[in-house]
Amino acid sequence: MTQTLQKTPSTLGDILGRAVEHLKAKGYATPRLDAELLLAHSLEFSRIDLYTKFDRPLDASEVTKFRNLLIRRLQQEPVAYIVGKKEFMGLPFFVSRDVLIPRSETEVLVETALEIFRPKGEQSLHILDLGVGSGCVGLSLLHHLPQSTLEGWDVSDALQVAEQNARHFGFDSSRYCFKKKDMLADDWERDHTFDLIVSNPPYIAESERENLAESVSRYEPAIALFAPDNGLKFYKKIADCARTSLKKDGRLLVEIGASQKEEVVRAFSNFGWQDIRSHKDLIGHDRVVEGRYG
Ligand code: GLN
Image 1 (cartoon, rainbow, N blue to C red):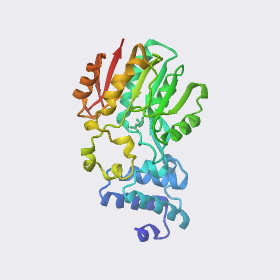
Image 2 (cartoon, rainbow, N blue to C red):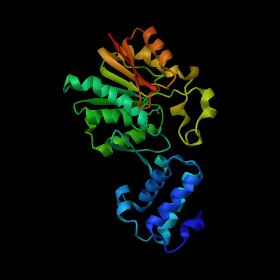
Image 3 (cartoon, rainbow, N blue to C red):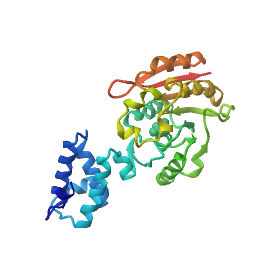
Image 4 (tube, rainbow, N blue to C red):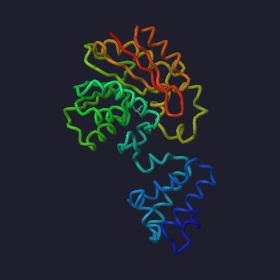
């Protein structure tokens, strides 16, 4: 690999082409995208810049910098952690290994909330995001619902990343607050203050651990992935406690694993939620369960 990349003279286009071939040969699913993101990051270019600079020669230090990033990718490290960012709902989120990498399927959670609340016109919604992680869910809602305010809870150091993202997007600090809280153990607010509660909680059963891709199980935080009670513990707690935190007629929306719809709907219904609906993601998997209370 080292030798392949160091043949001289090397243009950006040559180096990129060789990296793509290498990732492809090793069976990576998105070799061109990965190589472009890593090369653009190492040169501090945008991806578009790469296409206008194909003939630009790379010097030895540039090649070394890129090669080091590529080596990390070749050990299965996700590109998002290597470059420190990931796009979600069109916004560039900082990520670190303290947070789950935002997933495109989670956009269904945000889009469903927007479909419910946008037609009601501009209103000052108070939103609670349980297990805020990078902040991708709650902060994209703040972005798309400009009158809204957000409270985000997380039990882990992810909160610092959420805070960093909120500051980076330039939201007025009166619009958001983050709290270090364990939704399973700590007290919930019981004064019916929220219009909307959203959560993408940990939902993978421990028994599934060995079926996960290495890039997930080795690199992403276990605390954000796994849940006791066959993956259902957080849904049951949320279905119970959200009832006293939500305003009358407020909505609860949770992301679910593709096979969890029936059990999550049952948990919602056991705790008296109404108008329970589910929503699919773009590849047709059940992905979001919604309920109304009061
Ligand atoms: N809310 C964040 C996300 O959707 C984090 C979720 C989690 O850590 N389980 O990506």
